[in-house]
Image (cartoon, helix red, strand yellow):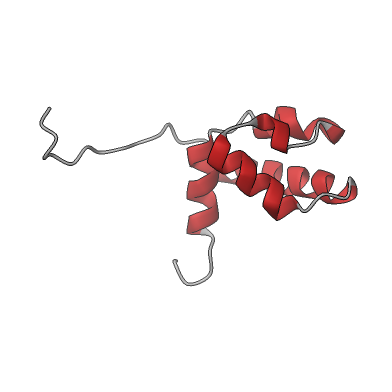
Length: 83
């Protein structure tokens, strides 16, 4: 494959509703523990370090069941103005 060719990046599709549900649960768990959920989720998405997500209510375990690329895809597709 040449460096000049564009490669198609495709992830295995998971259920969008399940991804949204898990994100909501993780967000609420972080909020209940007194964290800024947005900052913690951004840290996790950028670094891949699950330490950004509290283990409270199994939030860390839940977020790790979803590919980070899928999380970004769902967030972008649901951003106002994109769809």
